[in-house]
Amino acid sequence: MNRHSKLFLYLLLAIISVACGNPERPCSINGGNIAVAAASDEECSAPLKALLQCGRSAVDSIKSPIIGTAAITLKAYPPESPLMNFAADALLSEAQKQSTRKIDIAITNKGGLRSDIKEGIITYGDIYNVFPFENTLAILSLNGEQLLQLFNEIAQVHGEAISGAKLIIAHEPEKDSYKLAQATVGGKKIDKNKKYTIATSDYLAQGNDGLHTLAQGSDRQITTISIRDLMINHIATLHKAGKAVSAKEDKRIEELIPTTNR
Image (cartoon, rainbow, N blue to C red; front, top):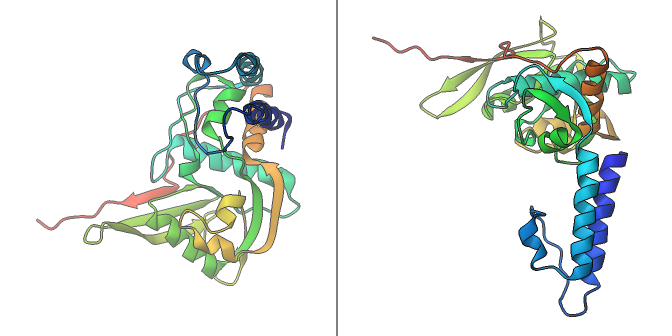
């Protein structure tokens, strides 16, 4: 967990501590978003008001530093999109720096991309909005047969963010579903007997979001390195080199359009 994540956690614990310290109301913890806004102050005790105001200032100071810029607005949508492609390419690049193994493919889930990266200045707060979850880097291996099974699962969910591979998926109108039609890795046909190394998140490595085959991976390395921190590092590296964040659709997941007989 990096410095910024720790500060958010400490702030949350402080708020819980004050709330639980009030003997006039029971304490419970429930998940969800709570807006810290002026309207909230009317329902707060004086100590909690002061804490919330302090929290706003602390959070703003964490969110505001600039880490880079974006040349265009990047959005996420299936089966591939600029934001999905950027996230997967950044994951592949940054994961390779963390591993002695050659990383063949990077995969992250489009559902984990919770906001756009807007054109212009990119701050820490922007990246927390895009990557709000505490997912960490996972590296694992699949053989070629398992990899084809995984790619078919990606086809069935109408695409995920991938790098290092190209998929062609076909829509089956009668079932309103998708299936894998063709796949290559590094421009080459998949060898069913070869081992391929994949960088992903610990969440997907458990087989979540329909990508069940990832749970079968061997040589598993679940790190404590935050996916969000990898993205921040990647953007900061680009910025230091005088480059802006940019990405485009490049048909790494191409959808076959069914033809109709006339």
